Image (tube, rainbow, N blue to C red; front, side, top):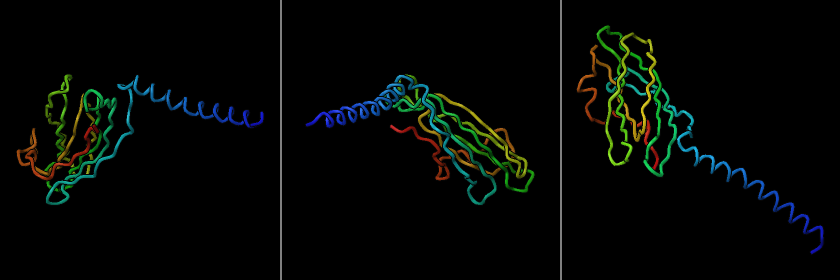
Length: 170
């Protein structure tokens, strides 16, 4: 091999090492900042109430700090969106009910929590946003039913109308 070949090999090796360095540094930074990694917001919906389009909900879900080595959950999860009443009846409201599965700090117990939002103004979307910590899964159901403080048992019952909008990858 002549001197020109050694120079070309040396330059190539230096370029390959320099190209690998940012990827290695980025991986190290990501692993050292596991609680700070934020995924881009993911859209969900629009979803409609069963038996006709009398209520509608749509929005985004944003997971932050997905560290799956210890607990398969998002450190922080924010759900934002709108719910609309699409029925013309003044006695009917559009509801969106969320089921949120959170994991305890030990990672050995899952607790289900409920969150609901409603809009009773025809075609006037109501905005909402909420945040939970150590979230494994979020599902929702859209209903159109009478005014009330809480959604009815028919709206919260476990039937096929529940839609999964987030499940932590593991």
